[in-house]
Image (tube, rainbow, N blue to C red; front, top):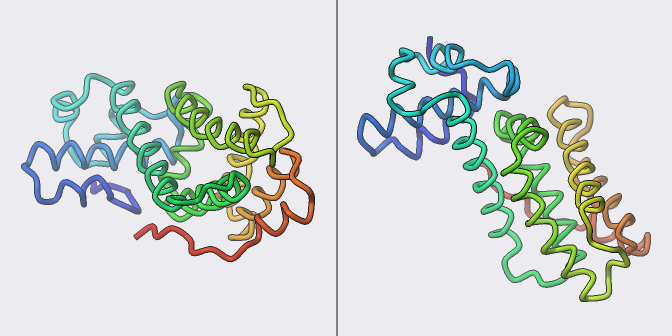
Length: 216
């Protein structure tokens, strides 16, 4: 059985590498597909290898166990999404615009690459390292906004969890097909209002026309 993967991104990256690297990438793509479909707890090495079309022994030549491949895959998903968001916001210094743009692009990327979006959503709940990376990303822009005088909040873990909760709730709704592309702007507007940005300014920033990140 071939890999049930809608976006074989790791395999594409490894296409010009050796057989071992290509097999490892194939397993990582399969793991993302399985995690997206059934979650981390229900996922098994057997299901990952069956999805990848390889033997269990091949899996253990590349990863110690399910926890090992989970750590590797979620770190890559988080790093790649963060890299895309950072590249999109290069040169943007205004915290209001950074928060609005970051939220919209995050939901867009996660919903366009559905396996990645589902993996990120599930990992945010259960993988501490991923949650730490998200916290650092959010804290930086929130503290910038406080310094600029545009956010009238105390930046603490409760605020950061609330921000992440809004983004993930709207990502989940997009993945389920309950809302459309406008969901990113709605999430951003809610967040900016929560941060103390005046309603008119929050709406303008959240619904501003921007070029969405390419997920090709």
